[in-house]
Structure formats: C-alpha cells, structure tokens
Length: 147
Image 1 (tube, rainbow, N blue to C red):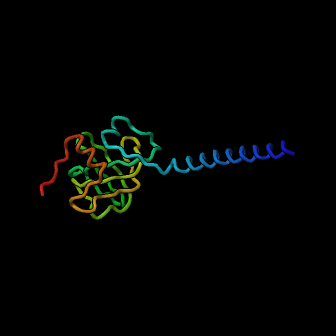
Image 2: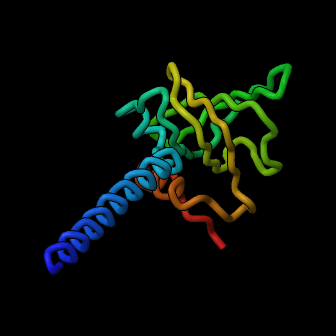
Image 3: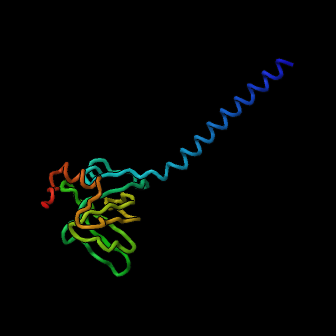
C-alpha cells in the first residue's frame, strides 16, 4: 500500500511538471508575436531585419519627403541624422505628423522600404519619444531646446 501511494504521488508531481512545461511553452509562443523591438534607421541599415519581422522604428521625418498618393497611402523618409529610410504607410496619419517632427512606426522592412502598419507622432511640440531622442543624441542631431 505504501508503494502505491508513493508511486501515485510521483505520477502527480511528474504530470504537474509536464503541464507547467507545456503551459510555459505556449505562453512563450503566444508572446513571440507581441514583442516589437525598437531600431533606429542606422541600426536598420547596418543589420537589415528579415522581411517578416515586425519591429518599431523612429526618427525625424525628413524635409520635403512627404508624398501623398491618390489613396490613403503616404510615403516619406525617416532619419536619425545618420541614415535615411523610406517609409510607406496606408492609413490616416496622426494630426501632429509633419516634416522635422518625431515619429515612431510599427511595421517591417521589405525591399529597402519600411512598410508601416501603425504610425505614432509626438503629442506636443516639446515631446519626443525616448527611443527617438536617444538615437538622435547618439548621432549628434538632437539639440536641447532653449526654454
């Protein structure tokens, strides 16, 4: 009788570990698509991501680069002061989107063009996303605004 209880207890513990391992694997697999890493234009040019990889990229919208098409498709260029990446976006842009303004986009890099699925713009004239600010400071483009 003692051996039966001991065997049953070991089976329950082993089954619990297997269930824990399976659930951990499923959670990791589900989160895999939800993680979007940030890259600056310089990082994208230096080490281009796979065409199916979704990531975030940000910088300043280049002067004179915004071209609005016949439909909702807009093309423009984003720079961090070091490199310039062309961007294509289909949808309605935020109201504060404009040239020489900070932006962050989510999308993928396909054939030398960042195809954005979402565009975020700064929400006032003093704000700039931290990732964009850091990459602009690294390249020496960013100058602290005077109060």
